[in-house]
Image (cartoon, rainbow, N blue to C red; front, side, top):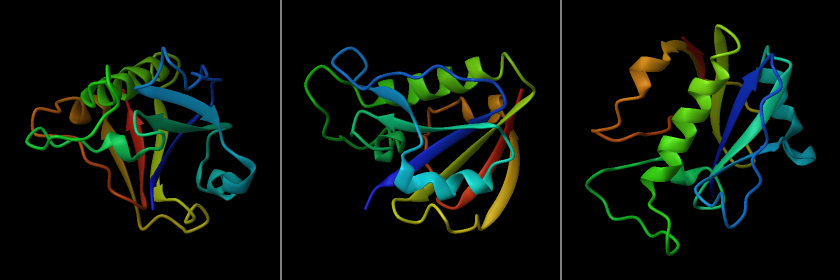
Length: 140
């Protein structure tokens, strides 16, 4: 089973195609079979965020582990690209929404809703970990 990570914004955010030049990070519209997740968001636009793993699992980062990655891809690149994308989204509005769930659980209500400032999640020296079913409002 895989993690699914979504971001919601009132502004249209750029899509990033998964391909040879964007293997570490990609952004797509929410697939039809995942549309139920959009009901958790208050924002107009919701997107799926993917990592080097081809899903969202690669957004978990333990600096003491050695993850398997395709040649030419450093797993931490996915985290840097994700954080950069979130920061850029915040250039256009005060807050964005971020939700992580297991694949197939998109309709499940979040267990908790929290708010954090982007600065609180950008220090990844101790790692970067996803908490499933936690709905996060990220602010400037």
